[in-house]
Length: 288
Image (cartoon, rainbow, N blue to C red):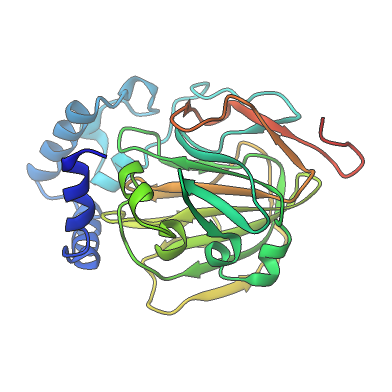
């Protein structure tokens, strides 16, 4: 870790992270004449955002920074790999991926945390003991809508309040239990031969997390809540299931024997929504 990265991690202990995040969210949801278009143009240049992929490539057409940041892609920009491929749910980079060591997931080299801590539910975590996980980090330049990696029926959703530390690789390597400490939305789906989970992790300056069925979920309150889906909502593979208002992290969890990840899914690998990152298997189809 460089000196600059160490200083950044240390400063996060002192910064008013919640206040900064709320202010960033308030700005991103409003159009301020001259300032909002200027910020969008500078953001595009600084991060090298490819607007040719957007359904609306003209930055001036977006009324707010959030509208720009959560922009839709043009048709055909992200073709879906054919079944039985497990799809990448987002654009981003692999933080870690592999098998759970019992209940434990690898956060970064030498740093682990438990599924129970991440999900906030020890009983649910038992489903994934010895299973498979993938952690994908979305950088500011990435497309920030999140899609279904496989067919699934919405089973439950929970909001778990927490901190708002950055989730970049330097902080992940330095702060144990980062993803289980930050604000997050936990969703579970019935599909892929069993139940699987998708966790959307909040972070500093992330103005909100939203889903198509619940709207804007964070920031909601200082109290956590959990609900079971009253009406089973079927979400086909590749369909949108959420969006980040500024970047963060998606964590996938599968029970043992239900998913096989590609051997190339190693830390640092870039992924794009819709590409194959492995395969899913029904209960009568052993993982090869």
